[in-house]
Length: 145
Ligand code: ZN
Image (cartoon, rainbow, N blue to C red; front, side, top):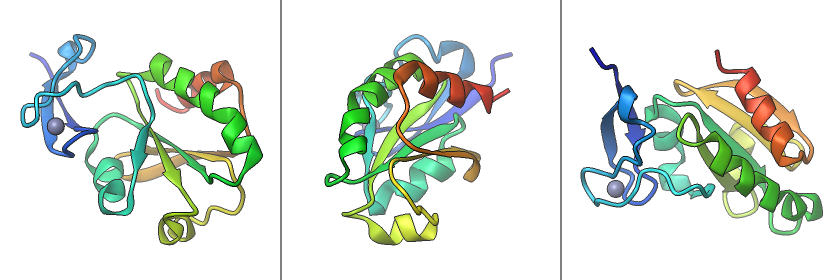
């Protein structure tokens, strides 16, 4: 019997149910038909942040960043590379803390970049400072059994 996972579509934000065994088969959204994984970090915004954090059954890795932050911009290619390595076991996303200050404040983001890992709507790990792609991947996997 295959366990079904809830996955929030990165395009239309519909909640999909995907059998865990088919996670690696490039699943498409039942609503908008676009791929549920794009090997790119998903740019979260205020209306959809809680939905992705709370409704995904896979862990969600979020890069809290800002456009004015040099280390954040330097880490962006590494984070995109990490996304392609972590999907589909993880949803990889970014939040612009300049554009969405209320969310950053709610999560007590004190420095950027900060990576936070969420599972089941709850933050399970956090790491401040820029990291290389391999280190991001290793760090994220080390917190998910
Ligand atoms: Zn969709």
